[in-house]
Length: 211
Image (cartoon, rainbow, N blue to C red; front, side, top):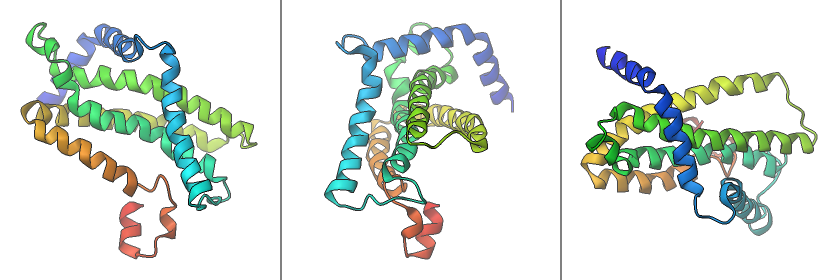
């Protein structure tokens, strides 16, 4: 309990620095690229297009899912995944990437995953807005269920902050753990049901696990 209080206190005491570091993290990510911030949209757009093309054109399995065009169903799952993937891997590596904050400045370790997550979350919100606009373009207007989004996004943010703190410490001690996380991320993506409808799986226990 005291540990949680200390973590919350560190976040409160360093709240201004967290926002500055999150901003710096975003700038550093896209610095030096001619297209700059555009890559925050171009990179996920290319990946979504590749998966849409593979499943809709190549494999011809891109049928409507629960009444929604496959493309809309795909981006609804892919956009949260981009944030989750970046935090699974980036959160695990955050202490290794920012060792200077610990060794030279004595910055609270518990706050490092937070500003990393904040920098990724800003991009996630921007992509989510684009997805909502795409849905509206297809004629699917926002409804009452959209009110759930802030709640689920908040839970996702806090969960991956905790993950970053847990995995970041383990990765700082062992590079093997970091390599394991990177390897499992790919497996997690293909087993997550983002690219296919889990309800169509005939194996009962597996369908329940994935759901």
